[in-house]
Amino acid sequence: MTAEPTIKRPRIWSRLPVIHQLRQSVGLQRGMLIVGLTITGIFILTAIFAPLIAPYGFAQLQDAHGDFGAQDPPGGKHLLGTTVGGYDVLSRVIWGAQTALLAILVAVVLSVFLGIVLGVVSGYIGGWLDRVLVVIADAVYAFPTLLLAIVSAIIISQGQSNLFGGILAAGLSITVVFIPQYFRVIRAEAVRIKSEAYVESAKVVGTGVIRIMFRHVLRNATRSLPLIITLNASEAIFTLAALGFLGFGIEPNSAAEWGYDLNKSISDVTSGIWWTSIFPGMAIVLVVLGVTLVGESLNDLADPRLRTRRRAVGVTTLGTISVQGGGALDDEVVDIDELEA
Image (cartoon, rainbow, N blue to C red):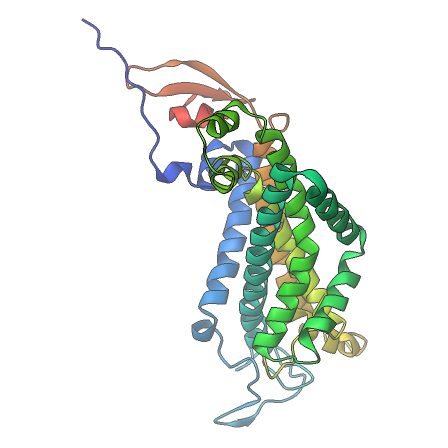
């Protein structure tokens, strides 16, 4: 007597954001996602362990052997050379990752929180409040992003360029730019979801407005947030670097910032001193590339028109589903959750 096949249920960790998308991806999409996650992971680890990895402090100008030389070429005790101010380039690049990560966290956390709350309230309640918030969001969104960030940084920092004040100013100035994006997405989802049957049922049984908004509407309106967060994180790095390059960033004795270092290396380029600019520039490009690859891969997987289709072939006696990837010659065995969505 043949035993009935059983379906292998997915593990809990396989449904975590990004991990679930990684299991769904195939071919070029999986390659892009893995490369992006690798670069982003290296960036995060570098930022966290900067005090252990960096050979010198971000504002250190001398060691036990004396002062560092200015504009020394790569080699010896300075693997990437020194800047015109006498700072170690490698140390500045490593510590700059920590500054960038802190600014991204401040910007993304604040913009996500404020954008979600305003979007849910505006979309569910509607009326005059919705119209006012939409007009304000559209006005902010229509304003040039970098110019708005510069004005916000000037107002918030009040000329203070220390670590806390600089990161807070940069993070808040970026937050002002990002809030309308989250507001628009969450509001549109809230307007759609509030007419669903389960929301109407919650109203009938007497569920409170606050509970409906944040238990039923919000839970189903945040599916696209991981994609927006990754794309905005790369934009936040560019905005932070632009603020530092234009002179609205953090002073070198308070924290390391890639945009500021690029600004100070402009005159070096014409003199043939390439190491003071190329390494901070490469750090910006690589981090933005990594985060952008993650965001674009998540976008492809979230859009049914872009996601690579998989064709189910049959259920094996082991309880798993045998499928064939688009264009692949060999079948592979995957869990059933890989065919969801």
